[in-house]
Amino acid sequence: MPAPRSTLRRGLTAVAALPLLALAATACGYGSQAKDDSRANVSATGKKLSSDTVRIGYFPNLTHATALVGIQEGTIQKELGGTRVESTTFNAGPSEIEALNAGSIDIGFIGPSPSINGYTKSQGKGLRIISGSASGGVKLVVNPDRIKTLDDVKGKRIATPQLGNTQDVAFLNWISQKGWKVDSQSGKGDVSVVRSDNKVTPDAYRSGDLDGAWVPEPTASKLVSEGAEVLLDEKDLWPDKKFVITNIIVSQKFLDAHPDVVEAVLKGSVATNKWINADPDRAKASANKALERLSGKPLPQEILDPAWESIEITDDPLAETLRTQAGHSVASGLLKEPDLRGIYDLGPLNKILQAEGLPEAADAGLGVK
Image 1 (cartoon, rainbow, N blue to C red):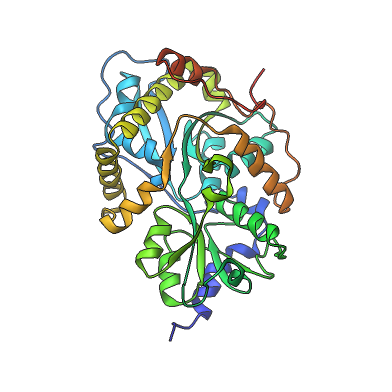
Image 2 (cartoon, rainbow, N blue to C red):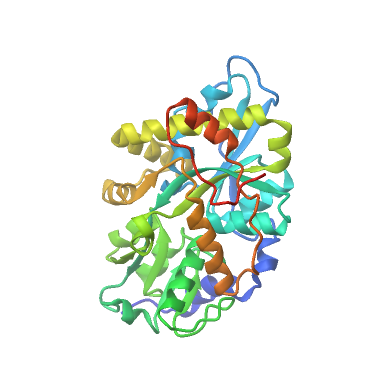
């Protein structure tokens, strides 16, 4: 018999009762943040650039492998010379956007939905997307005793990480494509969408409070280790099986003041991605070491291996897929039709890619003029 649902349900759904805009405007409204003051912040040596420090935010998730590995291995710090990296980890996109807006961080690794929300709320003045980082790594995993087919999802309780985040928008769009109705704010309807922190979701699933979850890695593989099964890999819904899951964004103010620092971080990102793709096994071990440093324990191999396998590390921001995701947010009622012209500034990235003999990244007509 599953554990009683009432207590867990109150905790899991409390966030769903709050309006999206109010949540997004609250600095500590989503997740927590912590300074990553570790040995991985390799001592800064060499010539200092135009800023003493650059403050980088990211999640302790495998979908943020560029940041995990780039900071762990000192690849980003190497490009910065005497300018020191200070890093902060976040559990959710809106809190990272809030930190960027408040000037607590300068550059962030983050998903497309928070990037879009942050850009539109600042009327195009708060941030720019300057690179891609990762594609894929999101799955619908379910209790196979309760859900055997996609149609069985109707009437069930399915978790997403938070109201209005990238996975929440994707799941709401998928529900709509099925012809089912769900109120985007409350999560109530033909499917019960439960907004649950990724750290809580495995325990909630284990207790029987959830029937499944639409979540990024490694949470999806953690649930599989608890007996869940993958019902749908989100990449199968996209052309070429590619969609942006992690971007690199920068404060417009910081970009204007310190373009040399931004370019150095991008050089470190490109170098990190090159190393990850050239030696994925060593990179996987490095990412897991970073997760151990951040959380106190590494991922078990049975979780790490499938999670890592499902993520593609890339410099390409996959801009056309961000445009599509913005449309999904509008269709779900979470966002008014946004003007995304100027959200990308890929000039510095393309300069680096060209020097490396790599294909330039496209901005889907949404770049700065």
